[in-house]
Length: 122
Image 1 (cartoon, one colour):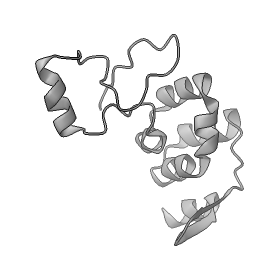
Image 2: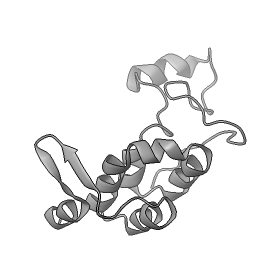
Image 3: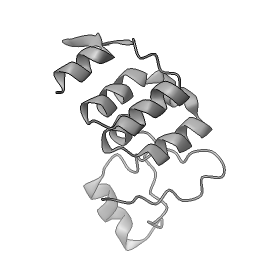
């Protein structure tokens, strides 16, 4: 299990690509961090990744602060939750975020309903 420090989330969500709150700007660790993760800190921007890992708490924080981020990427987020059998995340998205369970997702070659993706991931 991996724990990621969120830092101060009392205001807006931190920008993606910045340093995480546990790395100080100008420290010896800054270059190492960007060498390993050139896109910077993506905790609040990789919502499909959160769904795949089952990080319900962080998704709830995002939903509380900027629900449009979830609404705008509902297909990817739902499919990741379904394919990784994250039932609590799926229930949150359908029941709390009101993502349509009959949503049709079109990823080019991969298109279908959420039920299609659930069936294929068995």
